[in-house]
Image 1: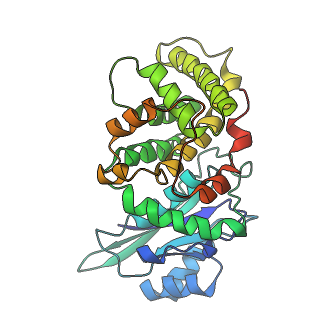
Image 2 (image 1 turned 90 degrees about the vertical axis):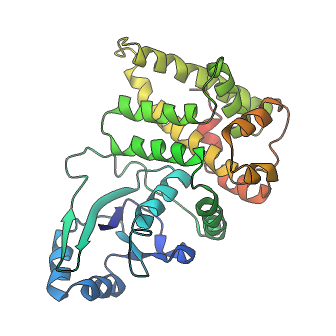
Image 3 (image 1 turned 135 degrees about the vertical axis):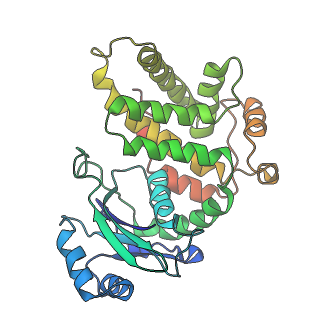
Length: 312
């Protein structure tokens, strides 16, 4: 089944991003290009039906489409692009509909879903915001991301991060994000402290930043322990939203930095989790995380510094 995700809640014109290296393109739903694409797949009447079903929004709706004939090897790419946008810029960018196509030798058919119809999605609170100055950097990062993420533990982190957007209950969102943290280290003794220290070193820029992140993660761990051990969260419920946003920003920074670490051994070892853990263990709070592209990292970090370097 080929799924065309229809995205809402983006302040930014997503058509400016370049995914041509994947034979994928983002187009506006109200464009002639989208109409031609649907008509070429089916017919004029089918397009009119789809257009009538799609929800209206204060933002432009965007569709992620394949620019080549779809098959088993590429039909997941439009959703993969959506995951990429969420991990690069945590937001409430939302798949408000999906156009689903089924083909076989005898017939072709389509349906259109409203997968967010029954979910209270905080759609207007945190739209995707990207500046034009960031476009070239994002396009460079996209090529690295899709080249190296396959079959590594990074893919597990991304999937659990994505799952946190799919479930309605905030406690399940919290657990999904917590699994991302645990995905980053080998599962052995003294996991808790090593995990907090590793993420603080990885995501912070200065000694002060790293100390704040370490303290914040200690608070988040305390809430996690209450949750998994069945304690009441009535007194802590107000913390969940801020912890969810904090974790999403932290995970985003971690994944982005992983692709730009100045250590060719990571590439040779296919981003082996144990080797990265050994490397981080040798780094102190006063050491700088060296990257291949400091300009890109500092540019991306502008979006997150105020969100992760503040005490919870």
